[in-house]
Amino acid sequence: MTSIALIGPGAVGGTVAAWLAQNPALSVTVCARTPFQGLEIQTPGGAISASPTALTDPANARPVDWVLIATKTYDTASAEAWLDALVGPQTRLAVLRNGVEHLEPFLDRLLATRIVPAVVDIPVERSAPGRILQRRDGSILVPDNAVGRDFVALFAHTPIAVSTTPDFKTQAWKKLALNCAGAVNALVLKPSAVAHDEAVAEVMRTLVRECVAVGRAEGADLSDDLPEVVIAGYRSAAPESVNSLQADRMAGRPMELDARNGVIVRRGAKHGIATPANAAVVALIKAAAE
Image (tube, rainbow, N blue to C red; front, side, top):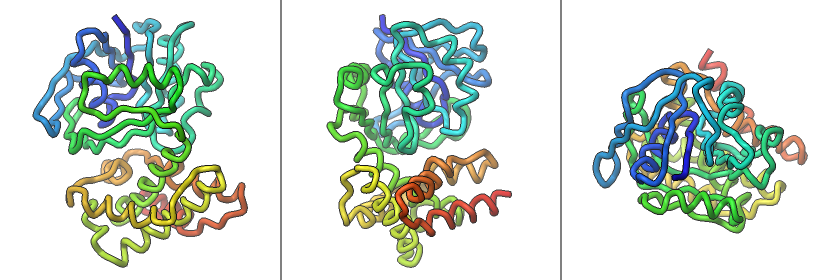
């Protein structure tokens, strides 16, 4: 039996854990800050539930075959005690996070050949601990290498489209283009339908154009029409859908501003590329949240 521990059972993490737990050949453990009563996911195909082993104390954890980390990017430090307990000589780590800096926080613990960076596109919203709405089956992309292919095999029984890509960097920057535009939703506190306002959509396009310029400098193959693709995606989404940045701001939680917009500013500066729109939304959202 393959043992899996998931750190961070939020919207994405809880959904992934619930789907993995549908396979009796997988032993799934969920590592959380506080106890919760199982997982209930409303999926496009109907409701699923799971009762994985739940741990709240790293002292009770043991090394596993796979660790999946689905915490927010600012929560790396809080996951360190879990990683100390869960990572053994053969453990592999999958990083299910936003942004383009998946590997860097973990290279002091594992070789890069044992880490799988993942681009996750599963629209999900959590209403309470363990209670999640999954709007689409969604997808996960990982690099096309041995550890990536082994990760894909874990999801063979699920409807989530988990696959490898020969150009992970490009896929990560494409997802970042989608995410950086979502800062507008977090700023104005309105769901996806706000993208139908053409003036708002143009602000979102500007954020994406900056992301494209920086991503290309970083080596990603990004098309000129990516801003329009992103806007089309927001306009075709459920009008009431809320991205995680907006959800975190509404709940008064910390936000992944650096991973979604700040990284564009930081890496733009490294390449001498101006990113005033992304810098502005970061400043405005921080000020509004305070």
